[in-house]
Image (cartoon, rainbow, N blue to C red; front, side):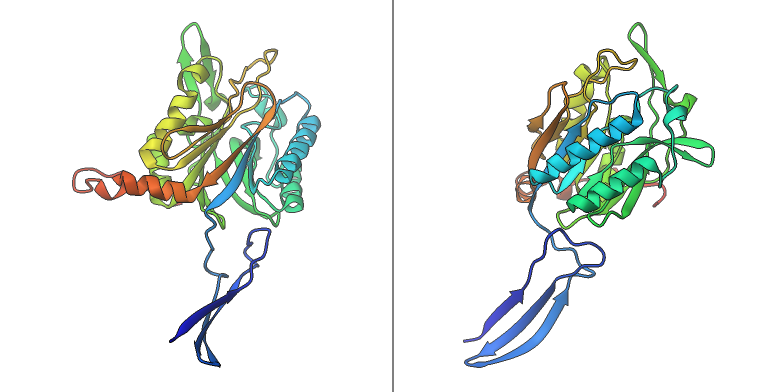
Amino acid sequence: MFNKQHVFTLQWPPLTSRQSLIFVITLCVGPYCLIIGQLSTASVLISISEFRLALVQLLVSPVKSENLSRARRQIKEAAGQGAKIVALPECFNSPYGTNYFPEYAEQIPGESSQVLSEVAKECGIYLIGGSIPEDDGGKLYNTCAVFGPDGNLLLKHRKIHLFDIDVPGKIRFQESETLSPGSTFSTFDTPFCKIGVGICYDIRFAELAQIYTKKGCQLLVYPGAFNMTTGPAHWELLQRGRAVDNQVYVATASPARDDKASYTAWGHSTVVSPWGDVVAKAGSEETIVYADIDLQYLTEVRQQIPIHTQKRHDLYSVNAVQEC
């Protein structure tokens, strides 16, 4: 009788680009064993089917240094509770408003991104850094920086769809008065799954979520700051829609509500399952939301309702115009 023995070692925190696992495969006949191969994960990421996600619902003040200190403290708390991926809210380092963006804007790397890099490395986590007003060559962007467990910058997502709305008698907001739109898709790999990143208004565009899903993303994260008009009406609805349409997990990280602010965020940071269930949800106050993401459950949902193999590509298609 032949036996295949798989001998391997596992290390934690999760793999970075410079770390790898070695699988040694031996073939044994009686007392004799022959090494017949080995596999390094230097070029292959090992998937781990369950992990903890944390959303930091931060109460943002007008003092940038205070926001950075509070963010660092809550990120460390989340990591201490077992979170392997932590997300901050949109505009976590500054008040949200077109008049604030030029005042609080900074380059990346810069003061805020340096704090994020340091705490990601200290905690050994993947950190989705909400967003900050970014200054690049005189242009301003609403930008999310993502850092790996080694503190390295993995990507910058510049908000693709600017928040320009006018609901008479309720709210008018025009991000385009000061911000420029981004023009790239933003996904990154982890040992758990591939993750797609959008910012707030990006969630209203179903095509972006579909493209991320086609790229292999199983979790979509949207730092966002819906308001007291759009929040009650659409915040949860949009998340559940993106989750069910694509059979992925969807997470949103909002600032905590500050009724004294010029722009009042809805709050209610949320995680939605591929079935469309709300599995974790905050209120309006400052808090940390935790959810244990189960990728095996995602697989089961896709097997039970196999829409990804039932699409009529002969009739319709959603494709990226440019690959970025």
